[in-house]
Length: 528
Ligand SMILES: Nc1ncnc2c1ncn2[C@@H]1O[C@H](COP(=O)(O)OP(=O)(O)OP(=O)(O)O)[C@@H](O)[C@H]1O
Image 1 (tube, rainbow, N blue to C red):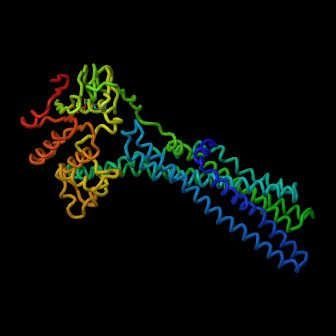
Image 2: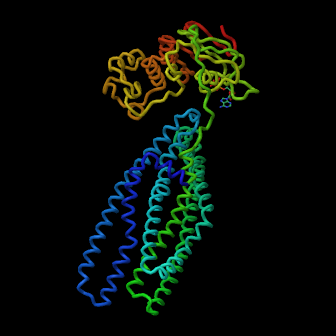
Image 3: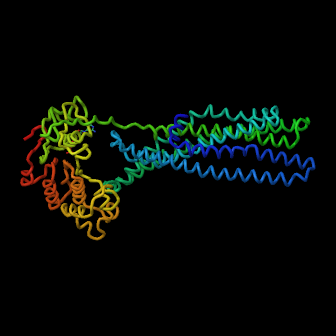
């Protein structure tokens, strides 16, 4: 657990130390109230009425210091917690872009960022400070007690250790409860995402009652495991509290007996009783807090350490050759070495090539593309990239997918994605792809995605515009015609074939006229 704490607070030690200092002042609370109440009782019992006002004044000043420390602590710890939250959420989001994580469902990250980190904040981050506070208060008050009357003080404190035994027996049980809830919660969020995204499909297939039932079942399971997790925590707290009451009553009886014997005054008994409680209560809380922190450990490990779901691909091999951009020699592609989807592929993709890939469904067109894009390793053979590629592979390829992605943002945002490009250039490219009408009313700040829905053809032309703006060497088009009417399809085809760079087009619905404009055709294995 210490390692996890170190990782969470790493780089934030200054703020943590300041919070700790104010917490230390705050921990004196364990002494102050018992001391003043005991003194007050003894002063009144002894009839020393003159000292009452100065005693109250001193009490008030010290109370003011403690309350101010409380506020200062809230301020600095609040800042610390904010920074930890930012780091964790930012880290999880960035990790989703790591190699090997592309296939992980978005819902997994959304649930980590929204639910898991909130839970970690409550159970781990807040509790880590409360844990320190409890230790400090316990220690400081214990020293005070030992100085005041160590024999009586120790007996009172000894009773207080009783409730700390409970967590020893319950921590594993609690941890299991959290793990089960985590599993069910993830499964529910996944189904929820599907249920929301597939609303039209579900209605079309008359599957509404089925999906409602499935979602209800997943929700019930998630809530039941949440209930179980909480009830286990409550049961553990209940046992601790029950033992706490027993121990408090035993020490009170002992204190009363010491007063009757004349060993201590009533004021000292009150002070010792209250101070001992401020040694034992934090200890009891400590056990609960430790339980909660231990219970949230699996969540924290998941957030900090979750590994990529698939092994990252090997780094691309670049050569000094200038007669090709991509070269495949005896390449086999697929998912299983014993059953390759495509075998012995031998071809070069040269600068300016217009390549058409044809093949029936399931013949391996997408698998081949993923391999060329280095998103997947070849099963065997050599795949090399020539020296005329402008930069990294990610700078080289643009892909027009069947469902291009649009951000819920402006047209400009969607086109430039954070780069600085002059408006004239944007308008020129929009004109080229025939999307200039989109910028008619509110110009480049037209909201698309949420504000204005784009048609299938417009989406694909937007993707071509992105590729043109970024001057991508190679435009890959993955069956872009599907779902388009003939005039939209013609327009897109024209745009693709006229793309100022190399084109790899997967398509089998091309007119003879368009097909003839490709200089190479790859019929899966056969290269003309
Ligand atoms: N992740 C995967 N794991 C194992 N097999 C897969 C995986 N993805 C695809 N396949 C299989 O590989 C074969 C080729 O699939 P691929 O998607 O490359 O075909 P395709 O030609 O692009 O098909 P379509 O035209 O229908 O999109 C199929 O038999 C498919 O079931």
